[in-house]
Amino acid sequence: MNSATPACITFDALSAGYERPVVGPVSFAVGADEVVALWGENGSGKTTLLNTAAGAVRIFGGRLVKRPGLRVSHQQQQALPIAGIPLSGRELFGLTGATPDHLPAPLVPLLDRRLSELSGGQLQLLQVFACLRAPADLVLLDEPTNNVDPGSVTLLVDALRNARGGRAVLFVSHDRRFVDAVADRVIEVGAP
Amino acid sequence: MNWDAVLDPLFFTPFVTGLLFAAVLPVLGMYLRLREEWLAALSFAQLAAAGSLVFAVLDWPVLAGGLVTAGTAAAFKSWLAASGNNGYALLMVAGWAVALLTLANVPAADHLGHALFDGQLYFTGAGHLWSIGVYAIVAAVALRVLSRSLLLERVFPNTLRANDRPAARVHLAFDVLIATGLALATATIGVMAAFALVFVPSMIAYRWGRSWKRALVIASVTSVASYVAAFEVALVNDQPFGPVLVLALVAAATVSWAGWRLTHR
Image (cartoon, rainbow over the protein chains, first blue to last red):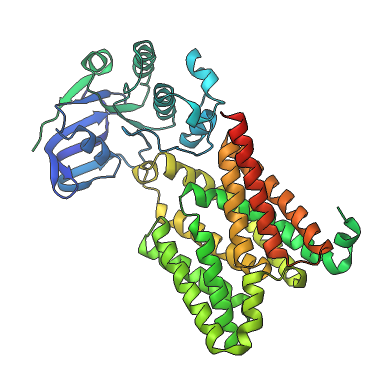
């Protein structure tokens, strides 16, 4: 992190998990306009660390310091739990407070379709863009390229490169090319 | 439609009272279905009936009995932080047991028991109309405030917590809103008719709605149309209203199901 950039979230010797710690202790901070990747083997605790930032995981040791009033949007790794729910793409954007203006052309026709009619890749793209476009200071993305075809990964790369401007992104990905294309910094995560 | 009968002063107040319930309850049903807690409708209706019977035996206000019992159950469930249908199933069987024990041991409660379980729409008065009128306004305002949080929690489960927004308050407000609506509905149209208005139109709307807003409209329109048809049929044929309404809603669900099968082969 650039020392001149104030941190929006700081992991300070943090250990976290569910029944017991599954990751940490780790220490790092994410600056206000940084794009930071969490990288590591399967089971190393990358998603747990991301979920800790969302307040969804138990902290066993160390501290998690959030900037006061920090606004967070969070795209989870699991498929959106929208089975059977009559919700449109435009309404999905409305939920996160995201603006659907100037979306990449392939996404525009999806806005007025029912989400349950979309393919897994289309749904993933809408979900990631709904989080990226949300009025958030910190965007948490968990495997944003899952189910997404190579052409659409390019849309995500462009979106993440343009995501800065007072907004931090902390993301998990197993796709090293994607990580190298968008991350300012890579944090290696290992099991405790 | 026999408008002369509906506009008859004797039936006009019951008609408008039921119409408001028919417009409001399906909207509550949409959010209960969203939270996968549709059993709450039957649970709160059953508890409201039990509470009304107990209050009647004690010679206390009957409507207050339903409201206090269902409201207390909602607060208790929120305090336990229980979600899903398990908590509601327990409350429902408890309400059923208390109601039947009261009926078995206090013969004087028998008439009220029938009214609560069968519905007494034709005997509703200005008090009932005012109650649902005020409730409809409160529910509209409350759901406008709660809707985004309820949807957000379902679709992006971590977002409220990640932003330090207290989901417990949303749950409590929603549970009390549901409990109050079902207690009022039980006192007016009966346990099963209230449950059917919550359950069936939202089921149809979930299938046909292209968006949440459209689904809310589909649920209310289906419900109101079924209600008007049921009111007419029950009045003209001198039948109890509750069962006729339930059958009208089941017919609507059957037509919806058949239409879906025909258009989505």
